[in-house]
Image (cartoon, rainbow, N blue to C red; front, top):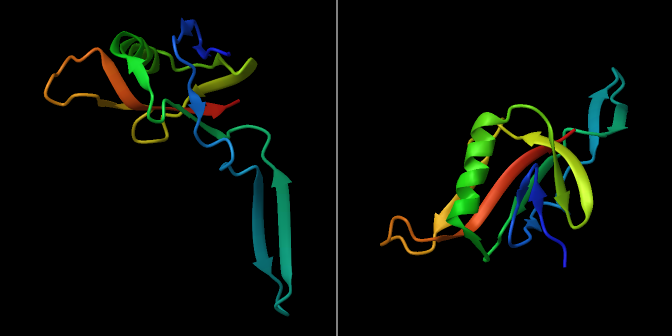
Length: 125
């Protein structure tokens, strides 16, 4: 079983690649000629692809989540993720509203040690 490592933070539970099968890999542009014929240009997107890792309905210890929050707040350069045995060069995706989100397992207890529905957003380089 593979673990997920984000830079130097080794997570106890592996994360799921949430958007693995839902990413745009080709950029396209279409313009029409004066006679109405389409002119289409397409190119492969080699980098800058959004990458979302998350726990789905699983758990993440609050201590690991807080390490990731601190990393996202202070690391503005590229770093490596090892996911399912594959190294991926990324940056935190600060073009989104929140780069890291999660839900408290028990909203009644403010510092419950587990979080669920964790989502981490990156951009590949």
